[in-house]
Length: 119
Image: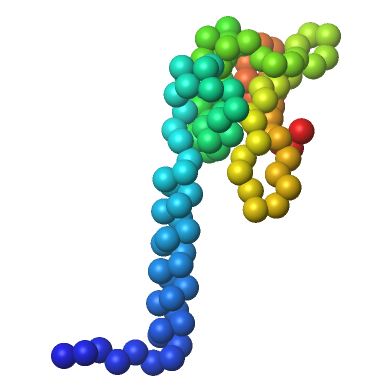
C-alpha cells in the first residue's frame, strides 16, 4: 500500500529532510573541545570554538584554569590583561573566509565572557 502525499506535504517533507541533513553536517564537522588537541592543532581550533562557547566551558574559570586548559593566549589586551585572544585558524568556506579568534574577557581574574570573532 502506497501513501499519497499532497503537494504541500511533499514540500514540507523535503524541507524537513534538508534540515535534518544540514544539522547532521554541523554535528559531524564540529568537534568537541579537547585540551590537548587545542594546544597542538592551532589551525583547527575553529572546530572546537563553538563547543567552548555553547557549552559555556570557560565561564567562571580563573586565568590559571584557563591557561591550563587552553595554554597561553596568542595575545592579551590592556595593561591588566582583562582580555585573552586565541587564534582559531580559518574555517573552510565557499567564500573568502576570514580568520577567527576566541576572545575571553575577565573581571577580577574570572572569565565572564567568551566569543568567537572575525580577526
